[in-house]
Amino acid sequence: MFKYHMLNPIADIGIREFDKNYVTCDDFKDSDCALVRSADMHKLEIPDKLLAVARAGAGVNNIPLEEYAKKGIVVFNTPGANANGVKELVLAGMFYASRGIFEGIEWINNEGINDPDVKKNAEKQKKNYAGTEVSGKKLGVIGLGAIGVKVANAATNLGMTVYGYDPYISVDAAWHLSRSIKHVHQVEEIYANCDYITIHVPLLDSTRHMINAEAIKIMKDSAILLNFARDELVDEEAVVSALKVGKLRKYVSDFPNPVTVGKEGCIVTPHLGASTEESEENCAVMAVKELRDYMENGNIKNSVNLPDISMGMPETVSRVMIIHNNVANVLTRLTSAFGDEGINIATLNSKSKGERAVSILDLDSPPTENILNRLEQSKEVIRVRVVK
Image 1: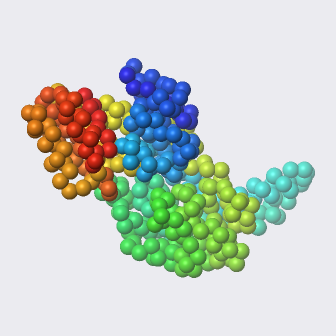
Image 2 (image 1 turned 180 degrees about the vertical axis):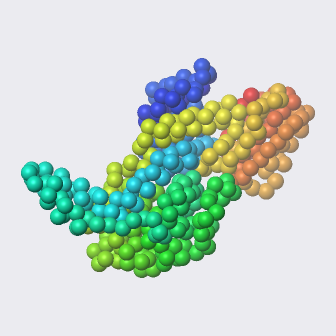
Image 3 (image 1 turned 30 degrees about the vertical axis):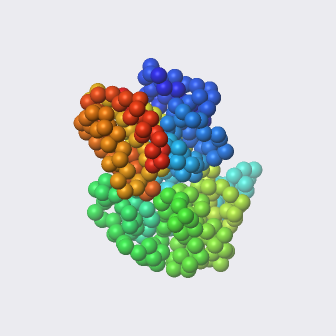
């Protein structure tokens, strides 16, 4: 029986993915696994028994990933589950920024609300909100993950010429990317050529303020910049300055903050990217399935702090999982513990990611207490789990 805790409300359709072997608990410190959306976990005391956390969404800035990795706690996210919802909002932002729709609605609501001649005056006023069409324009997509690929393909269908930049594009993403996308190898090509630029990369030390004053200098004076990934990917002070002098035409962001809210040329939405019923349900279902596969089988898929690894369902007498430091010869030393006790390892799989590794061992007989104690006492071992 596993106990799970929800740090935020999770869509019921996801919770229904748990079976009778899972029960909810009210206190985080009592949980074997946890589900979270936006709750800040940085100041929470980490329960000793906690094995995994699933973020029902893509961003994981609210979770202390390294601290959890050091304790052998797997953190999952749900890439792609909310991709369509974000894609649709990116397209909406592109239309808003192009056509003066947002400004026109503001005029109607403020100036026309008590005007008996609003219909006549609106005809006179509309020339102030004339915009441009997106068809025939160039869109640059920085980051070709689940969301970026969908945005790129949709824009192609709108008649746009699309440039894509992603030096780390996955094989799966490449398969789903339209052949008409111009895959560039230098992001500066996007800055220099595109009428619209949208960014879809994770927030890392290497990507923080990726779009800055130097990048903006390369852009067209009429360029529209869209940010539905993370506000800190963009130096927004530099963006506001560029808008003031007409270097940028518009900045569309999904992350309200004092730098951009109410500023001329900024269209800011209240973090609506994944706020659709479908996205929340998809994320919830995916998060629970990830937790269950890990808790029941030891498989890791979509981890953001430990390597992904899968051995399917256990088909032998026992399955042991070891989370350990990624150092030379450690696996040889660990597996010798089983050989010394005469226990045969039927199948073994080991994956590494940075400083850490995960090994799954399917055994022909259960591990002894002596083996488990020996593994746990190894200075290179972070956590040992008997999955079955």
